[in-house]
Amino acid sequence: MGFLLEYRDDWGMIRPFFEGLSEGRLYGTRCPLCEKIYCPPRAHCPSTGCNLSQTEWVELEPKGVLESYTILGLSTQGHIDELPLILGLVRVNGCSTCLMMRVEAERDELSCGARVEVRFREDAKRMRDLYAVLIG
Amino acid sequence: MSDVAIVAAGATRFDERIPRRAEELVAEALLEAFDGVKGLSLNEIDTLVTSYFIDARQVAEEWIIQDYIGHIPRAAFRVENGGGSGASAFYTAYSLIKGGLSDVVLVAGWEKMSLYRTLMANELIARGLDVDFDFDVGAIYTACYAMMAVRRMHVYGEREEDFARIAVKNRNNALKNPKGQWKRRITVEDVLESRLIAYPLKVLDCSLISDGAAVLILSSVERAKEITDDPVIVEGIGIGTDTMRLGDRAEITNFPACRVAARRAYRMAGIDDPVRDLDCAEIYDSFDTVELQTYEDLGFVKKGKGVEFIEETEIGGRLPVNMSGGLEGMGHPIGASPIAEIAEIFWQLRGESCNQVDGAERGLVHSHGGAGTAVVVSVLGR
Ligand SMILES: [Zn+2]
Image 1 (cartoon, rainbow over the protein chains, first blue to last red):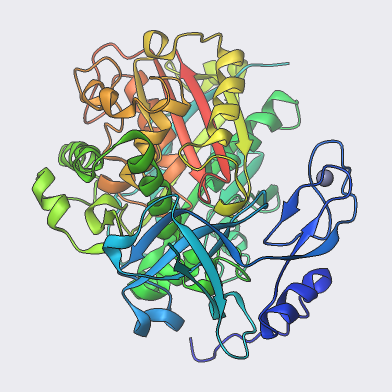
Image 2 (cartoon, rainbow over the protein chains, first blue to last red):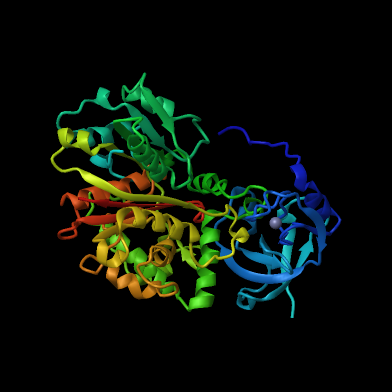
């Protein structure tokens, strides 16, 4: 396996989500028919009855709830140096779905249902540049 | 519409490294299958349906297999459905015969995991996560199952010891399986003390990384009578699906896709009380927690009560599960594993298993791809 696979991704219709990260803003998409908010965003709503109607962008307050978490002792090649790392499922307030992201916390502080704030690393471009911290 | 029978099954041993090429592994499994039949030659197989998972090195590897076993110029293709590929290939073979398009179908699955270092194997499997979201944050598949397990611990009060009991049962079952990869008796303490992969899952809570191949031959029940005295009937089969990303689901303690698959398979097979109506089952224990969750989704026990059912799944219990050792004990060559699970139930119902359940007449096979993104349930009977 002598070469590294490289990709040229344009993010398609959810590009605004990734552009928002670099500005420290979190965007989701809202279906005008069923009013569900998706983050991760979807350009089309898959809910029954919505017939893939096109969604609208909404800015989200970067706060939510930690639905679950894990502490990794093993990861993929790009993250091995960061072990052990904590990943969580974060339901941003008001959303129907959860984002999987890094959690920066002490292990014994972790609990399902904990309130979290989403933060952005400088010049964030991808999901790996987001992390959640526990708040009061 | 003809009913569908399995007339033969074969599998290589599963092991960390078997010095055979993929096509040689398939040939060995096929030779075993042919050992058990009369009145069938290779050229009477009209269709070949194949399954493998990792495309990183050789793309369209099924074309090597179909050539190598002398199947050309007859119909052949690959079915891809993640870890559920082998069972989806079986589903396809069933449909081809049921629909009258084929008479005798070979289902073949294989994987040659020893080509990759462990880290790389994990990474290639992790690419079955959404690469822009979950894979990008450093998740491996184990992370998704771990987050489901943490949620269950929170909601149902389950403990790591509970999960470990299933790993112990399956690995110790494998000691009776001459084809099994796992060769050492273990205890709950061994599991608890093993290396952390993703809390609460340690390495002994996870399935093995394996080389191996498995095959099945299916035919119409009419044709089956000419091929074997002892066919096994496919009484019911169903597939259910769910989102790729765990975070997109309304429910992460269980597998809704499994409930959909089971409902369909049970309806076809006329099963309304699975614990009463089934004698044995093979469940896709890619992680011991999957087996636990699946007891509930298959309707063996109520949601949240899976732990109470573990003792019933020992040999001698009300419904033995993973007599072969499962993916944790027999091994997990991804494209072959679901086919080997079906083969185990085939052997059980013919009274030929190495870890036989007395008088088994009806069995269930469960396979699972993604983090429950594709689930296949089949009911086999005499
Ligand atoms: Zn909608």
